[in-house]
Length: 362
Image 1 (cartoon, rainbow, N blue to C red):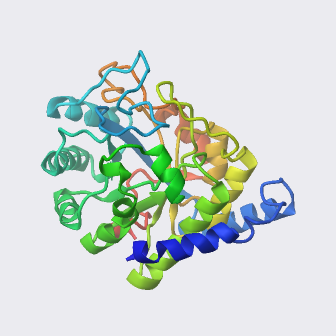
Image 2: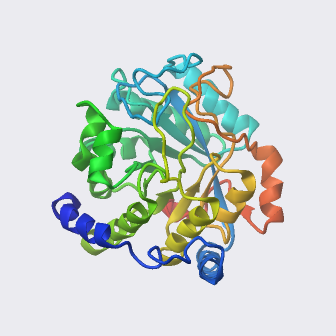
């Protein structure tokens, strides 16, 4: 178990981040960054040939028991515009059909706050419903972003049609993690979250996503630990996560957290993604509409990423006109923005035929 070795590995990273993150030239816009970007693009092109994989998040509930200090959905949020919403099955179907029929999406990520009324049985039903609708259009890729599950629950979700599951560590800094997640709820269990990737591997999930929320803690140590974690899982399990979450912190109107000096600059952020891409070209960054579209294109250089279109962080945000977002995003409509991907030398693979986490298409 990674958790049993974590303290030693964290102490090593805390003593000094992995190179080149320890260099003052990293993120300075000089030859080091240019070399990383070029190498990452080349390795991605060799592996994916410029294909990117469109996906849209679909928020199912904004009801949350957690008190994460950086999230607008936190229990006790002070955002006056936030309305707690939990979609029913008919509403969920309406949202999925919009993305599939009106926007051409074949990959949908179901996103859940830590809603105490949502069970594993509910999520299995939602996965089956989503997969059934998408399959009518030729291909069904269903993702999940929710609190970590047991290995048995992940197996049930896999059997229901789940293609990939993502769990962001938020930060690997254990002290910072405790400060950001007060109380005694599910998310306060650092070890349970840390070992979720091993449970996903044991359950046989095709796609497994890991990542940190850059801006919560020292990015040098967090990104160093991502690489350490990936290498450890590959050594002990023969595989690691094949999706990399690269969210960067955005202001949340109902949350008190101030990142201070932890938020990486645009240049540093791009170089972090390039560094990981160069080390692990088979791992697909999850490019988010938290970023400006030009930044998204830079992060997607060479292909081999999940590329977010039509992002609403509100349950019912596509068809039901609900308000109260988790955080602000760009609205990169699939029909309008796909041509800009092609102009940048990238090809949207709507059916995910080349994605490594979709094994039938490899």
